[in-house]
Length: 310
Image 1 (spheres, rainbow, N blue to C red):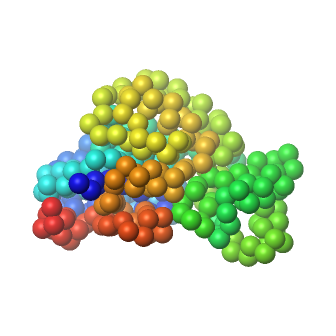
Image 2 (spheres, rainbow, N blue to C red; image 1 turned 180 degrees about the horizontal axis):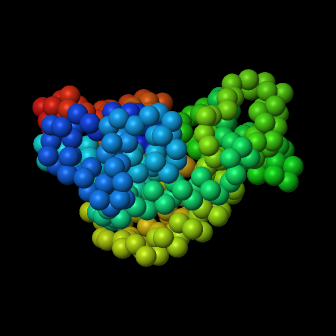
């Protein structure tokens, strides 16, 4: 019997209008956004439904907004379809959505935590001192060697193993620039700086990891109904005691997305359903596992299709 995974997007998938139609159509989605507004003390719903791109790009806004939009989709899927997951996973921020799906975190706790996480990550490094770049068509061992050569006492390292031939690096502006030049010198010409406000998932995020740890110390973690494949080790976790350490580790460690999908495929997962804004993860999964059956659900049309196929 083939298995199904629910997967949840991270930063970069946000857009103005996400969740609006869902909340207008389904009371369970509307109530979810009201819960987010109450938990945060401001209208996150308005930010999702009609916020400017500039406001939505601020990390402290992006993280709770994508979480809320993703869990709104999940709640409607649970109510309107018979779809169930054998495993869940999320890309970076999306791991919090996966943990809510598994019952490890309450939604209110998760949305408050990622609001803080976004703030901590933004404040960990002064704007303009760190950056990220997508490095294409370079094997991971070659890229790690390039990063070692480029560091010169500064930080630069792989931050996201997204799919075969797509690895993102993060670090100081100068070290990332050196890595791009070294890569080009070795014949790897496909490299581009990403429009991000901080160097996520590298050692420069250590202050954010420490602050997140303090917030998580005061947050309840519950038993899980389904294993969560963690970014930090690409392995399914069902132990609630490991949730907090894995989330803290994740802040400074690379997101092992390619490895996570390979692990789920090895466990018998054939269908991947992306819940939340955009189709970024569907695209990555397709490159990792050509045989995977893919769907994304983010709006009423997606729910109707899923309901018919469930």
